[in-house]
Amino acid sequence: MHHAHPEPPERFNFARHILALNSGRKNKLAYRDDSRELTYGELDERIRRFAAGLLQQGLQPEQRILLVMQDSIDMPVAFLGALFAGVVPVPVNTLLPADNYAYMMAHCDAKLIVVSDVLLPVVQQGLTLADRKIPLVISGQAHESAGMPLNAMLTAEPLSDLAHADTHADQFAFWLYSSGSTGQPKGTVHSHANLYWTAELYGKPVLGLREDDVVFSAAKLFFAYGLGNALTFPLTVGATTILMADRPTPAAVFDRLTQYQPTVFYGVPTLYVAMLASDVIPKREQVRLRICASAGEALPREVGEKFTSHFDCEILDGLGSTEMLHIFLSNRSGEVQYGTSGKPVPGYKLELRDEAGTVIGNDSVGELFIQGPSAAHLYWTNREKTQTSFQGSWVKSGDKYMRDAQGFYTYAGRSDDMLKVSGQYVSPIEVESALMGHEAVLECAVVGKTDDKGLTKTVAYVVLRKGHAAGTDTEAALKAFVKTRLTPHKYPREIWFTAELPKTATGKIQRFKLRELNENDA
Image (cartoon, rainbow, N blue to C red):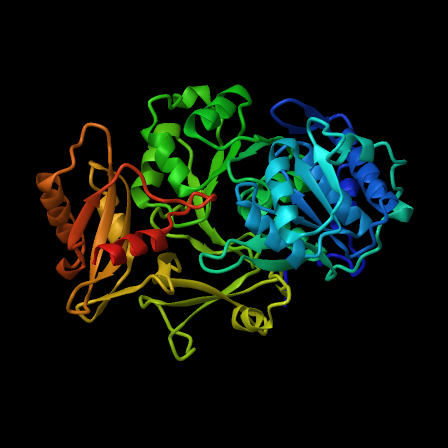
């Protein structure tokens, strides 16, 4: 496959690459977290010390270490330190219950766990459930009895360039667990080169990240999206990154935007909705935003438009996945079409296929397939799912999309979320977008419900804005409103008003939970 960008050399270690790129920026601020700052010079030294510490602990190249870490300056140190030593870091979601950690510890056969102090109890519970003895390294307040303080790891003599792991560009470098909406999460295995490609194809050309940027990602480093946002991209260009350990509430986000004046912000649609609805939203002159990004699910058109008119800053909505490592379909500065996921990121090829696997043209809904150099290699010990998702050089996204004549792609729902109502396909997303256009609606989710005749009808769960009352009048008004925006058969047959929608740790709406509610009602 031909890229306009130079291929990484065959022998390539991403951590080594980052250290070399920033060797002239010793005094530049690399990271600022809730309590500390780290210059590029200090980052370099810590990465090398952590790498040496891992080898001193007896870790072998290609063995896995689990990172159960909140976003702090220790996280990039542990992630890149492992890569530098040839050890495979597996960053995992910090909001999981103990049984998920037990599964992951066993599944990746972790030889060491690096854990943030506040997450120690749940990880210890996981160890008990997994019935494993795995040494712990603790970031934050030392708990001498439980494990080794991370700072003790950093007393090792720094690993020199000669001693770093001389890895192949395609060598397994790290894993990410994809949040399975069903069943156990899948261990998605990525290479050193995959990190390089996300920065070369999206971070620099599409996002336009520069050395003088200050970036802040509400999405955490353990997500594929957050890892690119707050590690791969800023470190590739020498920018400064703000890290926050806590949950990204609108108030906490506004606090960072006004205090540290980031120029680039990365969020998810549910957060943008909450930010716009907040009564502590800053004025545009209080922030210095140049560009924002959104991923995770489709950004409703009204949300993008409202955000831009308030902050005078575009949100580049895009589509990425754990399997592709970052965004491969995105809006561009200056040609943003809100309500779409934009156009393919140069360096990636996209196809829409029908049920039979035939490539289809514009204006019809198809299954999205992606080809590009940042695709994962496989799901660990899951041949069946690997073969379903990774088909030759193509990756099956599990999303349905439509492309218009201008080449813009519009999300039409997950492959398993499409509803057939009165014999016609209805995209729940399309109905949600229509509802979101009504002034009373803050958030909504649309799911299918089977009635007593075995037919599917659409049900909308709606969170109302302040000052709007739930009731039959509002319900009738919303139904009538949708009929003016979509073909009439698509209007939701039932509307339920609720105080909040169930969401995953990423802020994605858990439609399956709403579907279960429906089945219990039926």
